[in-house]
Image (cartoon, rainbow, N blue to C red):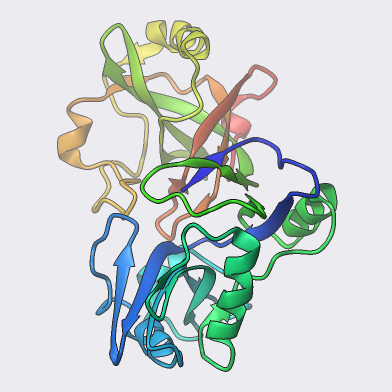
Length: 304
């Protein structure tokens, strides 16, 4: 697993790949039998039959691939949301292989990445499995290009690194290029003498709509600073027009009626800046993280 960072490492011993916005998965082929396993080793073969068929077309007798299951929308762009709506017209679900762990009885995890990549290219050639290619250029050029395409981010990998299973490794560094949005704080989930997460939203036709919870991005100092701003703004009534949610999303973006009982509401006047990966179909943020307090913004002016 890759270690998160704010910037890409540089140097000749590093190579760079697109960070695909999908499901990390291993594809295992043993003769005619193919299985797909999620990162936590859940069997997802039936969930993605097209990917299983693609792996079945590999000529190797036994093989273990590491990669990403990605949904491509009608515009040719990867979309995590699309994975949850695979029946939508115009979507393609594909498998991008980025590593080869086992081939015809040989364990390749101790081989350097460059060597594994050469073998991987030969394995997926003339199959429906796609290859996650190393990107040409410097780290700065690659970051600029990937940002310009609106893709999720970049993974930097040490070219001579071996495959470290079961834990995070600093031989793989992931940098996510997130979107930013100003949002209004309308509540929080308490945790002891501070908060666990903020409940944030934006205005639409003078109604404050909830955009979900923000739990990540806080240092102890920032958390104390934010709580100092909102602790005396508490009110008894929920200020969000669209709560409770009718359902909770795959990533827990929704807020149910039961969960609302544990929340505290605040007068919606404090604006914060939040980074996030994308908007979900029901109008919530995915992978939201706190960035800063915004005293230069008026709450009523905050829109999506």
